[in-house]
Image (cartoon, rainbow, N blue to C red; front, side):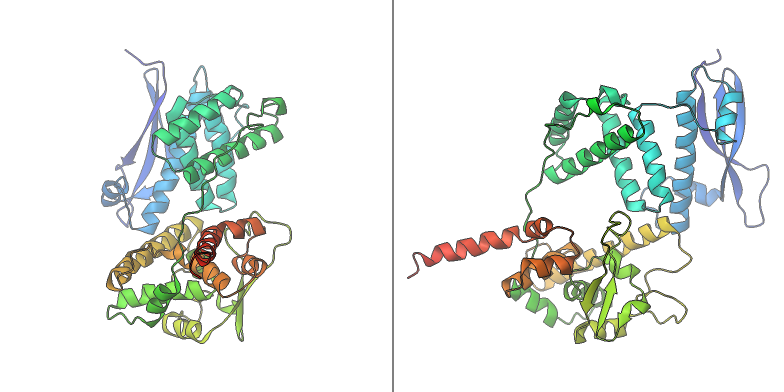
Length: 406
């Protein structure tokens, strides 16, 4: 019996094969006994098709194709969901001719619109994070209208996330992104400002967990000479981060040769350059002799590449850059665990630790919080104080012991 609900599926159109062995990937839509096929703009070999649905794909081009396929499928399924009743004529008007679909107040559709805007701005990491949040919300109580989300919903969702084992930090991220969607919806007049549920609701704030290494541990890292090539490379990039204002690996990978000016180099944080429009200033970093040695050893030998280190190439798009950097961070973290084991360092020693260690060591040496704020590129001293919170606790303990150690 024909179904009255439209559905869709992917398939490889093997009726024709291109010279490189690829077939066109198409999406087939079924409704009421009728089916129609639509191109996705993606071509795959049979081998690619067998690989693309597996987790942990390493090939950057396949990752990009998978994202494009998923986005196309999500678009089609979104149109199908909104058309009630469904008709192929109306579906094709929206899908093929990209006509604007009637306004919706469903939370998934608002998130999707916001995510697509992020993707157009090539804010890939943020887009991925927002997609994680909407998936979590849908798993909680389904695709609610935004007007149905009130303060009781927020409290129940927070409790649900805690029961799932999510950390206060993760819960805070989900809640702040949901709050941003509410502000976006109010701006778009999808909901009245009176329906804003975050007034009087406090988003969980995580206590900063100690991440910095102590001076003895840092000295052992600076003096260590691994025999393994991979460990040496990872350690050098960790040290480069530590010496360079604690800059994160994304900024190191994006660093360009032209940024170096004699005894300094400068850069804009990738994390803030798309969001902090006012008073956007470069972070200036002194080039120490150890930093110069690392650049000389691992720097980009391709004269035509603008990048200081050979992690990225100019031909990569935003998604490929994101995946390439993720792989590089994973490499550094994996090798640094081996370094920590060799040096018997029990503390975490990943890439983010270098940033916390930079700020904490400077504070121990008497640097002002304002100077450290400038080094880290924070907009507010309060953010910097969050980095230094555990250091301050240790200092208080040391002074307290002096009361009895007379």
